[in-house]
Length: 252
Image (cartoon, rainbow, N blue to C red; front, side, top):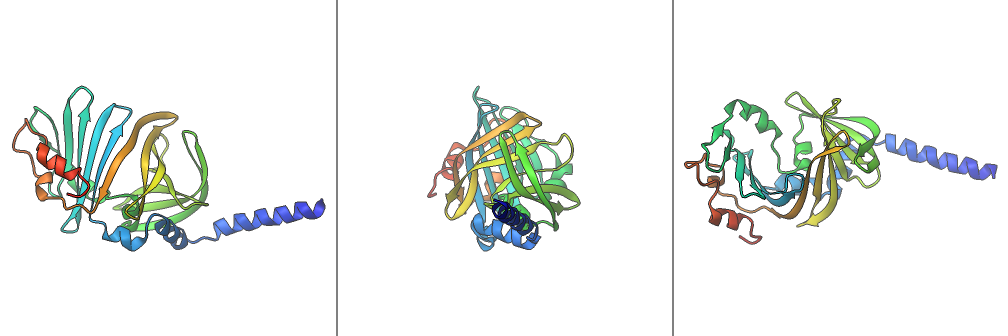
């Protein structure tokens, strides 16, 4: 009995020491291998995501692509009541528009958003200015309570924490890490064209769900024309129906 207890204790110490012996390079490498590979994510040029924001009962299309080394992105929301709105970043302008109203520009936000926008969390990690491994923590969000490596990412002076599962090396979630800040939980991972991506994203503030996005489909490396991100010329059309249709068809 004593030998059994000592053996179990030694196994526990080995596992604990093994988790702490990982370097940040090893943790990031294992994470990148799990989600598809570093080179595959570096070569990614665009994403088109169709999803449901269950908290607001609205359909959402996210379009993001690389143009001249900069990621552009656009979000288009369709509410249950029929209202349509959009936000867009094209490297020069950040603007938003509600259908039937004139677009509003927020150019002061361009330098900030240019550093934040990404095709996915793996690309954000790859493009961080610096990374620090701060040990292991319990990542708690909703019913999720898992052991994770706490990775501090720094980009343009801003810090974000990413939490990588110590067993599976999945990215379980991320946050700013400050008291009261929202925490994003990533769930329901699936393979898409060799990439491992979460099909559910839940944003918590404390124990309250602020938003819950559930993906319907995701298309990778489609050709995204520049006109998707052009500043609108009309208050009546958010995006042409034909352009939106082509973007959300797999083989177009």
